[in-house]
Image (cartoon, rainbow, N blue to C red; front, side, top):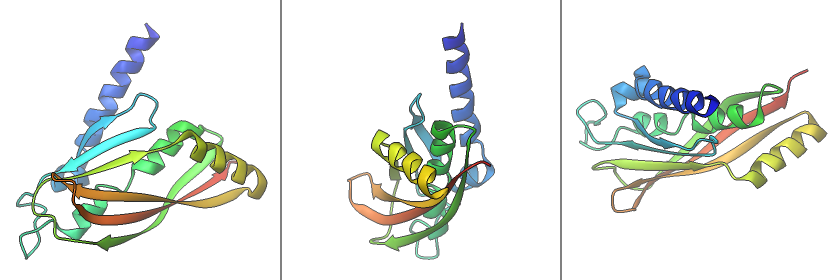
Length: 154
């Protein structure tokens, strides 16, 4: 029964995320989240609501599609003994997004171990995750360095 309950909670979370106002307005869609919260895929089609003056993907919408994922994944994987916050980001635009764009997020076990080890020693840290946003052809639209703050609860 607990497996069924977990599956229902997982599906609810995925549906709820897709109804989150900023995502709904920009057209950001969670395509897949792994059961262990260590990988996610999102996409965003070019629509009237996320198109800029030049007719391409609005930069703020591109950023919004990568904003919460690593924070959420770390919260789920590190547990209640840690505080996790998005701290900052930089975005480098490489070419205009003229259609649907995609981003993937992967939280490798060695990254989790590095974070736990560093926080044990230093009590807190900033970790930088690199995210690439690509179009349907796999061409790079932009790169985002996402900074996440992690510390142990006291």
